[in-house]
Length: 257
Image (cartoon, rainbow, N blue to C red; front, side, top):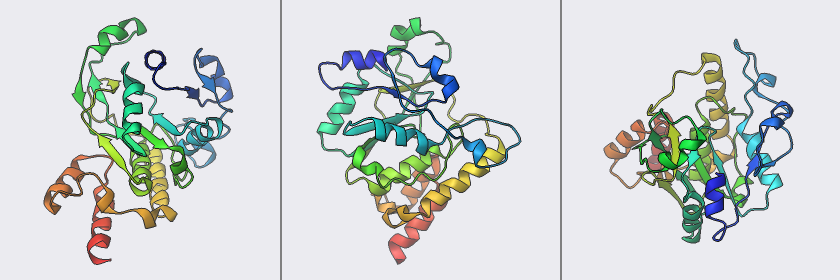
């Protein structure tokens, strides 16, 4: 991110912010600005067999919204890196009139382990990945976001974030083939999350879907919606951030009201 910011310095102003617990402040490196400390975690909201102090996505993005005056905000999962031209390309997409977009990552070999290997890493184009993990959106959209109390580090982050963009954005795009973000590791799906955390996040996802956001949801706004029904259902089934159960509900509403 620091490299990409430096390369974009004559094109667009980029501000890098962190969200952290008090005990994490010694991990914030020069070039990033700390927001106010996180003050709760998923452990405050449920009982879990294994204690993992996972923050809530809403708390993280709320701090970004409050402590940045940028017109566009970006959230990426913690295991996502960016190629050097990332911010330049993001700025170009914004200039094209998009109010939100999602950039899918490239999967790179797991042998990259050191900062000193970045220049070599940048030459790798990697392979596509279907999941959603990098979100760019106009700050005005966040006022109506419904993220419930979904925690990070467990499935349902990308699904929840994406549904907010699909529902609220007036002109969004899904970029599936751009070489702009990367994840080290070729796996498509990570190992199974602990069942109690998975159930918790699934419940929070449906809470977000059944909130005031629901009236804005439409399968017409989903990716691939212009394909014929069998094709779009097939593509939704292959995309982990497009839950087929919700898609079928929205299709019913689309055709039968």
